[in-house]
Image (cartoon, rainbow, N blue to C red):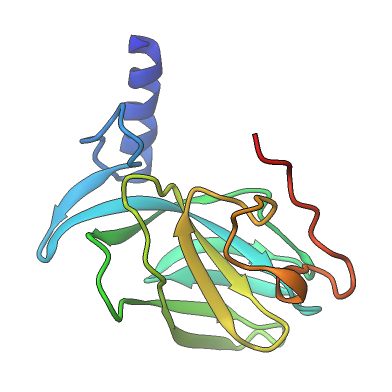
Length: 164
């Protein structure tokens, strides 16, 4: 167990997070001018047929995403406030398929900071961007994005994993 905790502390140090809650289900927390924050890994999903050259959340790089893909990796870390606040948004900036930088404020649905590990960013075919702060992937049966909107490729339903 000590080795596991040492590895977690090393990971948090590499991503610039403080491991003040090692051993709990929160990823990391650090004081901010508005209270506490929790570190969340960034994961991107591209539901469009155009490449996302690179994306950022609140200035933190999240990688690039080819059309109809995502969820296979993450980049560390973006800080989210604890507790969640009504009306909270994050700034999502991305390079579109023409190499132009775009930006949008995106609402963050309510999350539980004790059970989140990732901020999942979805670039949808409708042009909308949705984010979800949780510990689930798109393939989990309880993931909030459902139906045709969740499809990474049109007409190819997401196969959810069975509940355990």
